[in-house]
Each structure stands twice: as structure tokens, then as C-alpha cells.
Length: 426
Image (cartoon, rainbow, N blue to C red):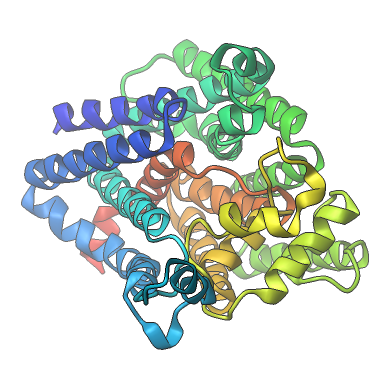
């Protein structure tokens, strides 16, 4: 199992250089590597660990299958639900085309492969992280990968000249990794004394300060690159980690800490609503962006069908609505939430949002009820909250660099959300 752990750790670290190569090639490489990681982890797992994995990760895996099935449905030749672009293309070519919900089958296939990669890493990481020492190795790899991604953000302008690509295309995808790294590193910094593994007090102190410094460095890099949107998301994730830590230290009753969290969330929501953009879709109401971008994104969402238009929608249609950006600029939509609604449709997007909120609550409850190693579920909850706010405050970001890292965070959180001894006793 240690060989599998090393392989997954290498896979996490490799997400950085892979994110710098051609998107199609990178997607294929990530898909192949994550499939191997899943196969290796399930082959090496012990029978007792496999039973535990099924119980803690089974419901999450079942929920994660729904978007995958929806992407497949969008790719099927459903003429009665096909996007109008297929009819226009058929008339142009003078031949009938069997259209689908998605307007770009190739892009939807790539999105399906990315989603399967996320699930593969999530299961592989959960299988590895059942044992605390292996979980710690994965955690340190995640923190190191986030720190490297933060360096890439700071060097984004030199990378633009070196790679000959647009700044957003070379570096913005790593913003997801950095956003993940801030609450994750902070949670681990607060919990390094929970499982010593033979390390001395001086070693634990150095590790704690190293993780805390990494979290601060990632936060500074993300705020420099993502500005206000990244700062809001990071503040929320860090606050959730600190609240969980304080509630444990003060031995607060879980209902008391839950009530305090709900009160703070309601105050934040009321503040956000008071400062939202009026008369636009909720998905773009909280972003600070040029008025032209907000309005053009609103027009795009208003014209899309309720079932979405599949992956590649913004790349195909955004230029029609956003020609004011200029012919040499890659068209973007105002928020990642708008891009996801364009892909999945509003109903599926809000369903995914509700499932994410439920996941945050479940991970937070697990962190409150855990003894040692509470930081893994706390970090998973904080990362989900950070990304949840980021989709409403940041523009559309490339998902590839963050797929492996996010899957590893969720997987370790699932494996450590409940103690094995407690589950067996129950």
C-alpha cells in the first residue's frame, strides 16, 4: 500500500506540470493516471479497510455519479431536445444532423473524463487515507503542491512570455489549487500535534510553522491574482477552520457551534445581498466585474435552454455576446457559476449546490466529533466552502489543475470523517 501511496502523491504533484501542457493531451494523461491510481489502490487495500471504505465513501460516490450520468445524457442523440445550433449546422451543410443537448460533443467527452478522474482520485485517496500515516503523507503532498501553484501565480507574467500563451490560460487554472491549499494547510497546521508518529516536539513545531507559512503564502498569492473574489472565498474557508478549531478547544456543544455558524452565514448573506448587482441572474449578482461583462453574461444565461448546452458552451457562444472584449481576447463569462449553469443547466447546478452544502455540513460535523485527525474533514469542509464562494465571485477558471488536488482533499476527508473504531463499535 505504501507504493500506491507514493504513486498517488506523485500524481498530485504532477498536476502542476500537466496543467501547463495542451488541454486535450493533459486531460488524457490525467485520465489514464487516475485510472491506474484507482486500480492500484483497490488492488492493494486490505479487506477490513475495503469494508470501511464502502461505508464512508459509498454515499458520496453515489451522489457524484449523478453529474456523470447527466453529462452522458447531454451527449446522446436526442433530436427532440437538441440544441438549435445542430439544426443551423445541418441547414448550412445541407444534411440532417442528429443533434444532442450539448453543442460540443468533444468538449462534453473531455468534461466526462475530468469528472471520472475526480472520482478516481477521490476513491484512491480515501483508500489510502484510512491509515493516519498514509493520510499525513498525502496531506503534505497537497500542501506542497498548493505552494508550487502559488509560485506559478506570482510568476504568471513571465510564464506568459515564456509559453507564448495568454496569462489567463497559463496560470488561472492554478488559482483553484491555491484556493484549496489555504484552508487545507491552515487546518493541518492546527492539527500537527494530533498524530505525532514518532516526531519530536521540535519537528512538530517546525512542521506547524511551515504549514502555516504555506497557507499565508497561498493566501497572498491568490489575493494578488484573484483580487476581491479570491479574498472573500479564502476568508470564508479560513473562518470555518478557525471556528471548528475554537469549538473543539472550548468544548462547545455541537448545537451551539452550529447556531453560531448559521448566524454568521446569515449575516454574510445579508451583506452580500445588499451589495449585489440588481436585475441580473443570481449566479452573477455578487461578482465585481465590468458592467458590460455582467450584462453580456446575463444575456447569455437568459438565452440558454433550461437543460444547459453542455461543456464548451462559453467557448462557442460567449464571443457572440461579448464581442466588446475584442477579437484577440479569449471571451470569458463573469463567474464560474454562470459557466456551470451554461454547461449543466440551472436545475442541475442548484442541485449540485445543495449537495455541496450538505457535504460541508457533514464534514464539519465529522470534524467536531473526531478526536485526533479532525483536520482532514475540517479541511474538506473549508475547501468546499471556499470553492462554493469562488464560483460566484471569480470568472470561469480551467478545472484541470484542480481536479486531482480536490479529489485528494475530499477523499482524505471522507476516510477520516469517522473513526474506524467508532464505526465498528456502532
